[in-house]
Image (cartoon, rainbow, N blue to C red; front, side, top):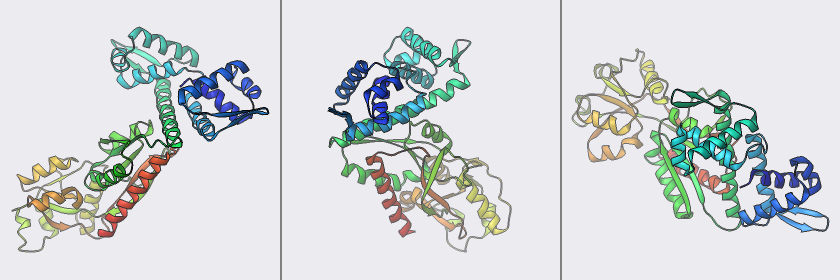
Length: 383
C-alpha cells in the first residue's frame, strides 16, 4: 500500500474533508482524490462515501484510518515509501544486501538506492560498513523495529478488512515456549483450526530470550509459556492462565523410582540434576524447592531446557529433573520415566500469554486468545 495514500485516508477521517487533509499531508486535492481511488482499488473495498457535503468514511475507511495512524506514527509520518521500508527491513533482517536481494528478488543496486534514499529522507545514517559486512547504527536498529511494527499493523489492517468482507482469512504467529507445546497450545490450535480452517497459524519454538525480540518487533503476535516475575518492562503485558506445579522425574528403574521408601531431601541431594539455566522460571523453582527443604541447592552438572534432550539423558543415567507432568505425560505412560516426588506445595510457576503493551489484536486473534483461555481453564481444573 502507498504510504502517502494511507496518510491521506487517515487525514480525511481525522479532519473531515479533502481540503483540510490536503494541507495536512501536503498533497493537492486532485492528488488525494486519485490516491484514495487507487487505495480503494488496491484494497477492494470502498473507504468513503462520496456525498455533496464531502467524503464520509465507511466502516472499512474508519478501520484503515485507525490502523494507518498507528503505522504512520511508527514510521514517523509519510517520509518513507513502501519500497524503502520493505528494502530496509529486509536488509536489517538478513544482515546483508546480497541476502536481502535473495529474499526480496530485488537487485542489490535497487536495495542500496532505496536504503540510501531512506537515510536522506530521514536525515539519519542507518547502516555502517564493517569490513565486508554491514551493521545497523543505533538509530537504524530503532527505525528497523518501528518499521517492522508498522508492517505488522498494516497486516492486521488487511486481515480486518477481509473479516469485514466476510472472508475469515489471515495468520496468527505464536511464540511457543517449552511447556506450552505439550498440551495447551496443540489443543487450542486444533480447536481454532476446526472453527477457522482458512486462517494460518505459525508456531515458532524457542526460549523466552529467543522469542521476546520477535514479539517486540511485531514478527510474533504472542508468546505462550512460563511468565517472568518480577516483570517491570512497559513494552509487554503478561496475562496469567494457570499455575503449574512441576514434579520430580527419573528413569524407570532409577534407585529412587523403586518405591521402597519415601524420597527424602537427602536422596535428592545424592543424585545429579538436569535443570534449565539460571534466570529461567523452572530453575528458580528448583532453587526454591531446596530452600523450602532448608538446604542449599546442589551443583548442577548439566544445564538444559530441551525436553527431548532431558528425556534422553534421564533414560540412560541416574539424573533427576524437575518438569511439568504435561511435558512428559507420554513418556510416563510408556513407562520410560517415572515420577519420584513432587515439589513442596507453593512451588509453582505461572503459565500465561505475553503480548506487546500496544498490541491491538484483530477479531480472529482475540478469538484465538479466548480459546487459549478455555483450554487453560480445562488444564487448571484437572490440576
